[in-house]
Image 1: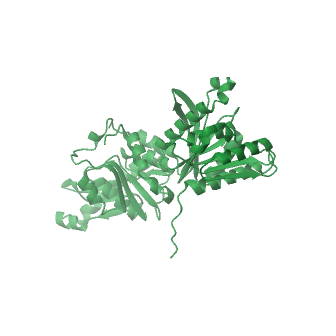
Image 2: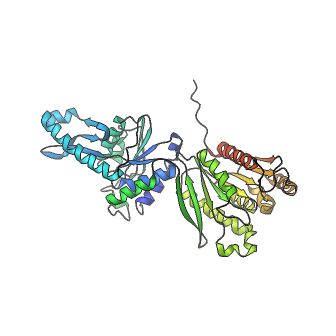
Image 3: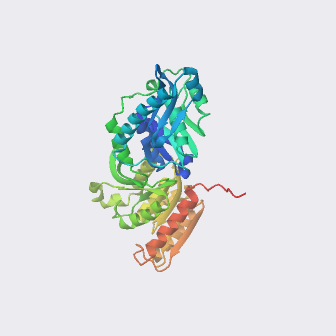
Length: 428
C-alpha cells in the first residue's frame, strides 16, 4: 500500500479506527512525522490531539542501544537487564536521564506553545506515528503512556515491518496497522511524499486541533466541477455526522437548520451544512427546484464526507432539500444511514421514494395542512422503516415558540437511535 503523503495516510488510518470513537480517546502524535498523521485521526474521531514526547536513554558508550526511556510528568521506563548487562553505574544512569529529560522538556514546551499536557489517566490513548521500522521509539512511547495512567493503549500506524508489529503487540492493548509489507526496508519508501515535518508544522497542527472541543472548519465540497462552501463541525468523540440539505431560498446559514445542528452537536453528532447552489445559480429559480441537481450535489457531499470521517452519515433535509435528501438516499451506494425531513416536500422525490432503505423520519407542522397530506402520500411509497411526526400548532417554518425545539429533539433522537452504535451491556 502506497500513501500519497502523511495527510492521506492519516485519513486512511482513521478509517480503521472508527470503532474507538465511542471510547472518547486521546490521540497522541509522535513528533515530528507522526503529528500530521495523528491530526487527521483526531479530526475524524472528534478527539483531542496532543504529542507524546519521549527520549530514549542510551548506553553512554553505545548510545544507539537504549536501556530505557523517559516521558513527561516524570514517567520513566528502565530495563534493569540491559543496565546490568551493559555495566552502567547509577551515576551514569542519572546523568543520561537528566540530559534527556532537559531536552524532552524543551521540546514539549516548544511544541505546545505553553499549553498544558493532556491528562491520560483512565483514558483510551491512540499513539500515532507515520510508520514503524525498528519499533524502539513506538515501544518507548507506549510504555510511557501506560506509565502516565492510560488504561487502554492503541498503537496506530499506516505501515510497519511485519515482525516488528508482532513484537509490539506485547506492549499495547491493540495494534492497528494498514500495511505490513514483507519486503520492508524503510518507512519512507511507502510514501510518494515523505518530506520532513518541521517543528513549526507540529506547532501549527496542534494549535488547529485545539484541546478537545468541537472542531469547526470551513470546507469546500466539489461536485461536477462546482465548488460549494460548507461548515463542518465535529464534536469531541463524534459518533456520526449529519449532512444538511437546505430548502428553497435558503443556504448553509439558515438559522433554523443551524439551531437544529447545534442540538445535534450537543448530542455528539457532527454536522455539515453546505450550499447546494452557488450565488450565481440561485438567481435562476429553476435551479432551486431541480431536485436531480440538488440530490447529485448532496450525494457528492456525502461521498466527500465519508472519505474524510470514519463514522456513519445521515441526512437532514428541509423543504425541497428533503426531496433531494431522499432521492440521494435511494441510490444503492448512498451510504446514508438515516434521513430526517423537516417541513419537507418528499413528494418531489417521485418514484425514488420506493428505493429509500435508510430509516426515515418525516416531521411536519400541525397547521401545515397541505404539506401534511403530501407527507402522508409520500410515506405510503416508502419501503423502509419510517415515521410521521406532527408538531401541534406549528406552521411550515416552525416559527412558533418551542416548535423548532421539538423538531431538533425529534431529529436528535432519530439520528442517535439509527446512526450511533448501541453501548455494550456491561451488567452482570
